[in-house]
Amino acid sequence: MPTLDYIVTPVAAGAHRLRVVLETAVEAGAPVELVLPSWIPGSYVIRDFARHLLSIAAESDGEPIDVVSLDRQRWGCTPGGERLRVVCEFYARDESVRAAFLDDTRAFFNFTSLALRPAGRERDGCRVTLEAPVGIDDWQVITTLAGEDIDSRGFGVYTADDYWALIDQPVAMGTAVEYVRFAVRGVPHAFVLLGSHDADTQRLAADLGQVCEAQAAVFDELPAREYLFFAQITANGFGGLEHRESSVLQVARNALPARIEPQPGQATRSSAYETLLGLCSHEYFHLWNVKRIRPAAVAASDLQSEAYFRDLWAYEGVTSYYDDLGLVRAGLISEQGYLDRLATLATRIDRTPGRHRQSLAQSSFDAWLKFYRPDENTPNAVVSYYGKGAQFALGLDLKLRVETDGALALDDVMRELWQRHGRHDAPVPEHGLATLAAELSGLDLSDFVDAHLETTIDAPWADWLRYFGIEALFAPASDDAALIQGRLGLRVGSEAQPRVAHVFDAGVAQAAGLSPQDRLVALDGVEVVGATLAERLRRYPAGAVVRMHLLRGDELLLREVTLAADAAGEWKLRIDSQADPDAHARRANWLQGVHAAA
Image (cartoon, rainbow, N blue to C red; front, side, top):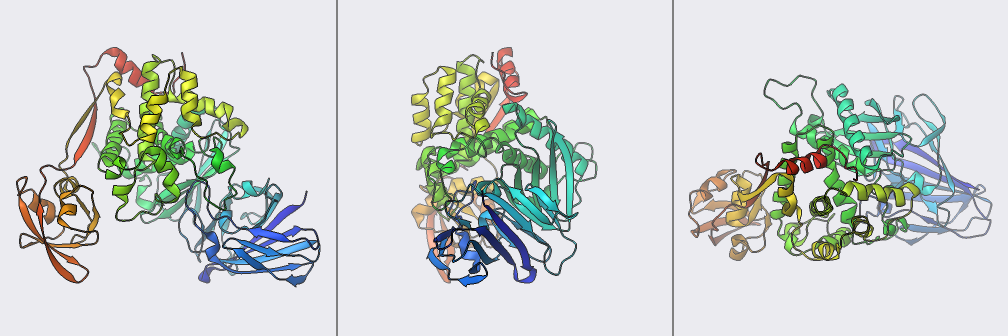
């Protein structure tokens, strides 16, 4: 079988240019269509990577041939001989985890951004030559591609089984590289620090090993031959993207664990570090759920257009449920710490009016249109399939545990999904998780599932907590943001002169005519600066009518606002020490170890 041979060269770091050459055997005289993906799996929005293509040229058996644009991501040519050579240059300055970046300190790229493929030859084997950057001598390569003929720094020839395998293997290059190595179930793992840092790498290795083991225990199988966390160290970045044997993370430098010992009374792990561990836990769970337990719509996609499906919550929401659950099961956060995280999530969703407008199934379907393109009205228009999906997964898990008297849990459903689908790379049909949960439990879940996925009623997470010895309380919050949202119906920025970020539906500010981007100048004739807005609001009773001066563009406006009574609410969860022993036992089974069916 012919191969697709790629050569990737960082040709001009200062100009952020990568050259990519494709060489392959072709049929003389037969037209060839060349295709570049328009989106990357795991990030459900059209990204039009072709917009960064600077030039494209082709030759066949050494003779130049014309290349014609067919649409925004396809090109056509007709080779006159039996070899085709296509040379592209790309502008690479996207610092996210999804595309391609090059400067004189480092390089990172996904092949979805750079590698054109001949249409219809996606299953051909791929060979990739990674060349050292022009004029830079001390870089090394980090990738999960299989090396065939590489030097001590990692430059040379790599292979991939086919094009789909190639685009699931990101590549990083640079100088400030450190591998933090550990093993899980005999499989080598590493957290690869890409950038300067002062992290306690021993703690990092120990904690990540526990997190990964907790997630592997859900499926009782670890299918990777190796696993890398590519950690791009930044000033304040956060985010990740999953791959089949790796994940790419943006990590704030201060989120890494410090080498100094905590003072007496201080938490062992900082909040920022716990959040980083949660991100790692999330991306690692995707090794099974998304990368191998795959939605049928994504598996069938050629990455040229959207792949719509209505249960994205089952992949991102369920994974979001398991990310913090993995931390408590790994012993890295306490049970109360986990409940605090659930309460924070519930509070955030409760303060999102869009949950009354968009169902969880519609949120999944609309990801391509709305989730990745937020604007000032987003909180009124959408609900996150990550957050509300995690709440539904929690509710489903607790319902299964209670109504089967401990015989079944979501762990069992995920493990069976792995056995039936992920282990054999058999795509999951839409609604596959919900259907399997009903089959395994013997429960009629149709009304439960329809109500919570197809309507806008709240996810059922709080209904079941009392069976696990947990009290759920909801009351007005005391923080400034909650006060401003509850009494005004606004969210403001942190500028010295507060700028309106969001105006919430059905709030008093919306009724009074305030708009996003308005700058708040004064309240009843007294200047509003920074935190003084919340301080002033605390001085007024419910129903008070206040005069607000604001700047809209360069025009000074006056609006009268009738203040609401209370701050926005918040959830608090706590363990009920008076609960019966059975409830405590259920909680221990849920939070302290993977469920084993009776």
